[in-house]
Length: 627
Image (tube, rainbow, N blue to C red; front, side):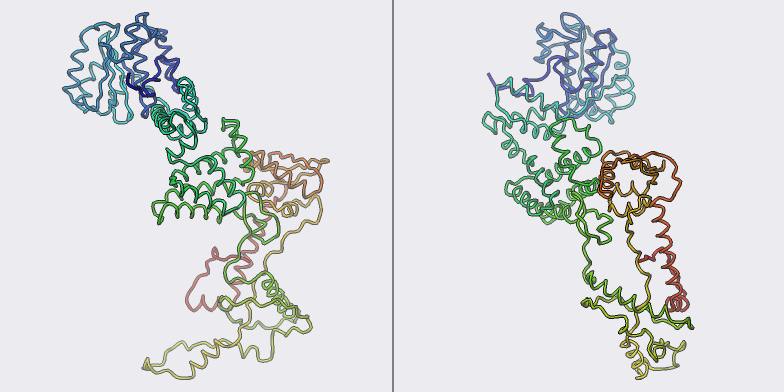
């Protein structure tokens, strides 16, 4: 006897054994039980989800010798002949090869005759969307008012191509794609019946490779059994499919959480040695990041309890913002593989982006010391050519000492200032502490004359040859360029906020906790109501109540408060109108004030005024960034 493939051998024979289409089974069984039988059904869905299988079960239910029933016996001659495909009153027609009006007319001519053996004559037209327009028009009248003994079953993978006049005459059922869990369970039962050893991890790879099609899963299972010489093992299935294993995906996530770039590149080298698909790897990696983000916000959406526990342990090591960024990098890296020199280079560049680009927390943006959050930001890197922190502090101290004597001097007539020097990078000088008594006064005798700007005349000498150049302008220009220029007065950066230990200073407490991300935004939008023992009472405006929706965000803020206060604290947040100024409002006011001061300083600068007057320029206030 010839071998029968698993997809045909294990085709469901009744509604009870049908997998993954419970909504269709419920409607059909109720219709069969109550006798409310329509004359035309339309089944839509992708390949291998059960359209033909449901059609055959429905034909057996209509023609079973025990009567019209939702549970055909499967042993009578009608049921066995329908399963074998030789029942004379059940006709399956492929519309892809019988798509013309003549084929449809020939089929409809036979519809007028009564059934030969069965109770109903059932016509099943597969891929009905491939019929021509004339063929659809030819069947409209019969489809609307067929004989009492006639039933139509239409199946298609593309219902958009079917005319609405046909759709309105049918009961339409949309068959869903098979969930991976359903496929794994069904394959497990089949392998147990076939006495084939298997590993559950291998079945998960087959379920993902089937993309929701049970027939594709059974075909891959046949191939896996042949590939493994009668065994279905995970390693063999991964080699057969060229897919990336979960151990490699979790190794990438572990390396990303630990910021271990060599470990991540080692996974890429292993994949290249095994000739695995880097595109499939990025797709699977993006899917894993999606499940991690889902675990952070809605862990109940992960149905597999073992997988949920594994994902929760990993998700706790990442900030939500970083997972969103990593997901975007992964999907864009997959799109960029076609533009890369080779797939390996594109994949490793994606790993380098994941390692390099990390959200920056506010504490690190200010250059404060502190431990990096889990899976979060690295320390902000200095730009090339920027002065070292010690040199920058020395420059700030020198500027402060230079400005102090000028402020202490009596008010005098304003002197024109030289424009700020060009921002050319200079080597950072070592910091030196100079006593205030030895500091040179900022204004020496002859300072005004030495730094008086030399303005060119408003008129050009008439008929001066372009190749003749006098020595005086050249000397004046050289002297002006070589003359030392005073440092322009710049607004001082805002002083960092330091908590003084007062329990009513919520603004200082927020700054002292050095929060980041959603936790920092939640704290800044709250108003401190007071302390009731260990309970810290806060009030959050109605417009920002979504910030307190996540329990993990409130827990992080509570832990930070406990660490700041040095004792265990409980957090209580109520929603309502705030009566005092929140840290966010105070920061906004301070930002606006500093911006206004910076704009006023620029407008008062003589060089800026001269540029505006000479070139009819306009100062774009939105482009001014206070220090």
